[in-house]
Length: 221
Image (cartoon, rainbow, N blue to C red; front, side):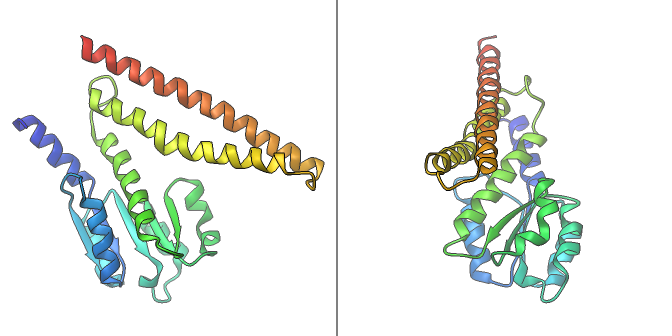
């Protein structure tokens, strides 16, 4: 790695800092391990109290913040999330059902909700890794001047968007196939979901192919 590459890696690592807020030290260690395994070094800070979280939030320009709702201890969730999400995306861990309190932030793509059920830690780490990859792309040179960034963008289109979309399409088609009990209105709505999902999948395929084509041309020049 030459000096320019080292500088770029250090800059992206700094701009892709992680802030982990949870009173559960074991959970913090596990998330930290998952985030650093096989990845470049990151500036990572852990806060086990609300006061520590606010202090680190002020000092660290984090690209993503993990918030365990058990850290709030009575503090109003919506207002606190609003404060955090104004600077960087938030991954919120909370009891099932609390997503209704933060729907606005989910819709604005400022927050990812993870329910506190089963073994949720790998999902938390996966969602945070996705946010960090997007942050790294934002810190990298614009498309067309950095083939690595273009390849990463194509990969995100293929997996981070297309895979969930395939799940949505498959479930909608399954409901239609076994939907004899559904009303005509419900069937029409499901058919609309299928049509829009197919349309979006085709758009993603075209964009991904175009990015990969541009990347190959860039390498050949």
